[in-house]
Length: 356
Ligand code: COI
Image 1 (tube, rainbow, N blue to C red):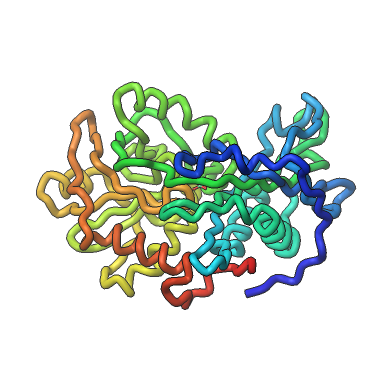
Image 2: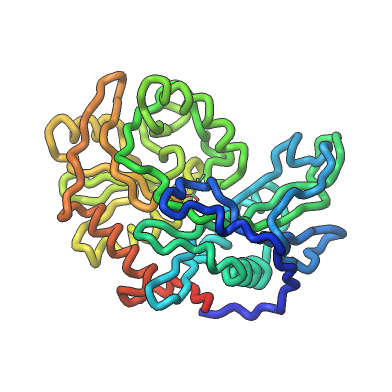
């Protein structure tokens, strides 16, 4: 699937930092690639995007994003296979979500041409930064922020759209220990839980920090009214195999419409499992952990891909989740997803955007 794009102005760096990257120890987000996309919105219109060397940006300390939080991002990935072909995974779907987030935050939408055209050019310019070790990829971070300098509380009239990329290893290096959060709230119905806005992440730091002090890696956010139903986890959606069925919280205004979530649900029937998107109660998860009918729990997300959950703490009681085996749904789903992205398996859903 191709998108009609205009040629983009490219200024290449004279000082590549590529040789300083330790590709055997990438971590997540530690390195930013040589170039970035920058485009400006002024006087009601987007102006020519450009690719320039990654570096500092001049801005006023009065910009509205810093004070009132108009800042939205996306997270996506590019992969290079053995033949050297580069695929970006589902950029159209990421753009749809980005535009939904932007609408909720009163920010101007982006066209396919601007979003996909400029990110495909950026990935091509920094092609040498795409890692090829198994499980690694080039993480792509498009984001937009309000850059009108004004202290009055208002919707900004000016914005910057920027894309950075970063060669990354898997987000979690081992199965994740989670705690069901029953005091703090990530999102309430009608709020911005479904939006990928910066504030959602900043607001999650404090409860997550407290959970980490207790020895957990992440929390399961629960509904704001009763703390009885699971929404999502820190940087990922959550899925369970319960009584042999794949179950995941249904989409509401309080959780993110994950692209990996959607991909795994789409692949589930070809992997021979029935799926249910519905409210998922903590009580049924606890019951399933007690009587052995809950056989898998895992997180799914662009950064997390498919991350096994090792244990779940419910009302202060810690339950071990059975370890994933080669037959587990989650590992079969992860392999299938990976094979599609690397061009090993046919891309019947047209998810890959071919850069070259
Ligand atoms: C992503 O999967 O892109 C995320 O949003 C996680 C990120 C905050 C690291």
